[in-house]
Every structure is written in structure tokens, then in C-alpha cells.
Image 1 (spheres, rainbow, N blue to C red):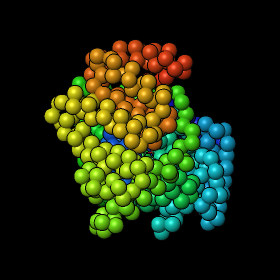
Image 2 (cartoon, rainbow, N blue to C red; image 1 turned 180 degrees about the horizontal axis):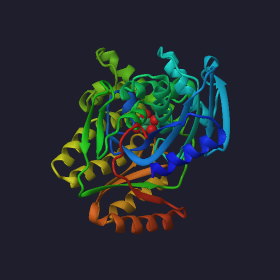
Image 3 (cartoon, rainbow, N blue to C red; image 1 turned 60 degrees about the vertical axis):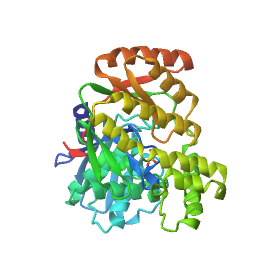
Image 4 (cartoon, rainbow, N blue to C red; image 1 turned 90 degrees about the vertical axis):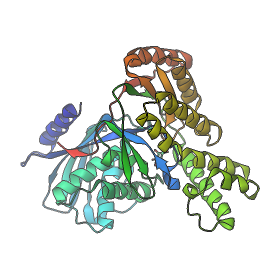
Length: 387
Ligand code: GLA
């Protein structure tokens, strides 16, 4: 699949920017998060994997100070002087491209002027991190032409800086990390404080099914920032008694329960989700390693209920699709994935039943909500590479 996209970017590059040398192509995957939701910005644990949907960037250096980029999807070419990049000056897709160049310069790197063509097949607004895939593919490409070392962990945090400050979305590190550092065949359990990641191999007997509800996210940025604020308020309340606490990662369920009367009930609910959810990735990884998919699936179901009832980021469609999934005999568990409010859910399914799961549950869901769901299986895909 990414060979077709890479050829498309190369061909488009040759047609638009008619000069030698041949461009180099960088590719980075979207991601689906298996468990550990809304924990990354609380210094907790997440467990995402790269998916077989990609952003690709064809790139060649230029002799001046200009960054010029064409988007195949948006059929648009935009350019800007590298030395004139300022946060919040570019909206839309070009903001992700320019933002990465800006963030590399912020971190002291010398960025080569370049022409780029970007293309991809990660659905936009579906909760599969099309923007992080684009940022990381751009970072991989710019590192190549600028002769910078490719350090996936450092580049994930540079792309996060681009998203936080240039684009203006206060996301955590999970999506950029997954796009940069995912492993073929494994999900990654990431400690969002130390940025250490442990591969969690997905056995052949299990399939990860991405269930796109067909609902594009709305209101996400304000709701997302709202949740972050509740978490910060909960930390501030806990710190009055326990000043060593830096983030909800440092709080356990009992310590939080002691503080129930010291914070408002909404903050308490949000914090309770985070505190319990941050323990789920390790429990999930252990269950998968012990060949106990029933337990892994149970944890996914529990995570969904917590996101629905305590964190309140699910939606009717996400609830319908996950309940329909759990009705299927081959399904071990299902949950919403990503920020929430629409987008995708994910299910853990027995490999030999994945085909019937997809046809039956997709039909049940689509009939129930009157929307076309789009389900697909993805192997855990590798992080950013040059092709
Ligand atoms: C979005 C953000 C991530 C993470 C998830 C929720 O995808 O970009 O950093 O916070 O939501 O887990």
C-alpha cells in the first residue's frame, strides 16, 4: 500500500517541480491506541501501534531559504521562507509541514530549504493520527535533506512541539511517538514520563480490527483542553497534601479517594479515570504475553466504560459499535481509541473469526446508526522510514 503512495508522491513531484535530482521519499504510519487513553499528558502509560495507513513525503533540497510544499489530497501548493516561520501563521495542512521545520529550528537544528510533496491515506479526523503521521514523515524527510541524525524519540518530541506551539493543539506525546518509533509486528507500551518503550508482540492468533464509525470528530480541541485542565486541577488539589506529586501518574486510587472532598466532583471523576487507566497498559501487555486474550479484552471493555462514564469522551456511535463488537463470538474486547467524540474504536478479535467479525459487526453498526462504518484489520506497522 505505501509503495503506491510513494510512487504517487514521486510522480507528482516530477510533474510539479521539474528538476533533478530525484526526490527521496519518507513514510510514517497513523496509529491506533490499544489501551491507556488520556494518560499521556498525565505522564502515564499508553499502548499504541502503527497501522497500515500512511503519510508520505517526497523531498528534494533547494538552494535558497524557501520551504515549498504541495498536498496531493488538498491539491494545493504553499510556500514560506524558513527564516520567517512563526507559530500560528499557517493554518490547515501546511501548518504541520511548516511547524516541524519551525520546531527543528527552535531546537537548534539547521534546516535545509526544500521542495516537498505530501500524500497519504490515513483518514483525516478519524482519531488515527493523520496529523502526527504527516509531522513525522516531514521530520524524517527534513532530517534526510538536512543531514540530521534520525533519533525517533527526539523527533517525536520535536513534532509534539510543532503541534503544541505552531499548530496550537495541546496534545501529549503518544501519536508522534507511535508514528516515529512503532515496530513491525508489535504494539509499544510507552512510559510517557521516561519515554521508554517496550514492544508488545501481537500473536498471529489475534487480529486488531479498527472500526471507523464514520463520524468525524467535532468540538475535540475545546473538550480535550477542558479534560487537561481538570487533570491539572486535580493534581493541584492533591499537591496540597502530597507536594511530591508531579502528575496524576504519581497518584494511586486510594490516595485520590482520600482527596475526594478536597476537589470538585467533576475533577475527581476525570482523575479517577486517569489513575486507574494508567495501570491498564501493563496489565494488558501481561495478559497478551500470557496468551490470555480474554483478560486483555476485559481490560479493553473496562477502559471503554471508564472513558464513557468518568472521562465522558465517548459518543453514541462509539458506544453502539463497541457493544455490537462484543456481541460477536470472536471478539475478546472493544473500546474507543484516541481522543474520543467520534472517530474510531478498536477490537481484539480471534484471527480465524476476523472476517466474519468485520462483515457482521460492520453491517449491524451501519444499520443501527444509519452511517457507513468502515472496518479494517491492521498488522502493527513499523514507524517512519525512508523508502
Ligand atoms: C489525542 C492526543 C494524544 C492523546 C489522545 C488520548 O490523540 O493527540 O496525545 O492524548 O488524544 O489518549
